[in-house]
Image (tube, rainbow, N blue to C red; front, side):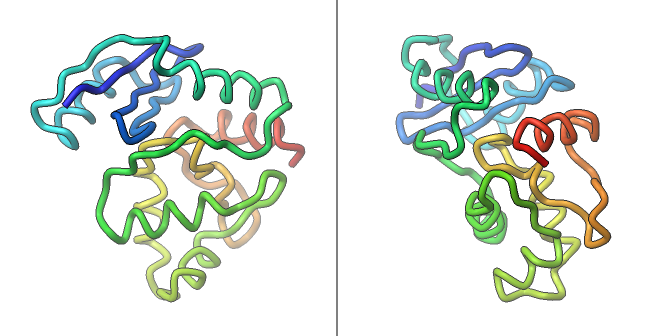
Length: 161
């Protein structure tokens, strides 16, 4: 399997032939992407190919300019069934809105799985496209984010929150 990747700002974006599979965050490195691919797609070859990823890069650019509210790029989500269920639910949170971890747990009919929802949210391989930054604590406060709370706040501010 070939995994195509390209740098975007201070992120790396990677995709399989099925869709975007991994996006690193500014506090992560090339090694983070390489390790993720090695674990999730053993034997895959990483090939730099900005042309193949021009569509998702264009969407990310438009998002950062405040011109895009919904991503259309196909995704290739790699994770457990539970993680994919969480990510699919998180992907439905509209721009300009947030949900708490407990609300996500209730939406997937597992109201007692709040911590597991948090862990799945933290393992989201395609942040921004699956907007895990829109998930906050029940108190309304910002809580953990793989990219750090300043980045989470920056993304929510960009979205008008």
